[in-house]
Length: 97
Image (cartoon, rainbow, N blue to C red):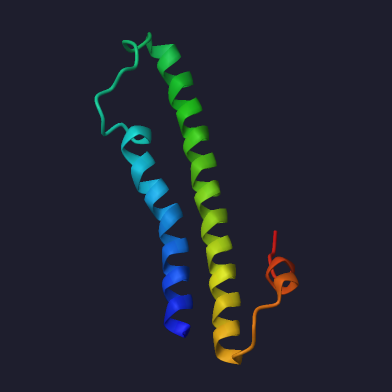
């Protein structure tokens, strides 16, 4: 019966991973680029600055998602080790933001 819980957990963790992998080629320029021609030099610096800020936001989002996954794994590990049914209030109370 525990292997079923493990399988469900694995599938649940694969869904966000699949979403990231399916979104990655479009977001990181691996598909043909459909952007307009490069602007003059001054505008290029502004464009790079905006892209850098966007990339920093993406990194922060991924870091938060990773921390959420770690928290969920800790809860599941505690439930599996204790052998008791999960307490729905415990999962939300353990998150640190």
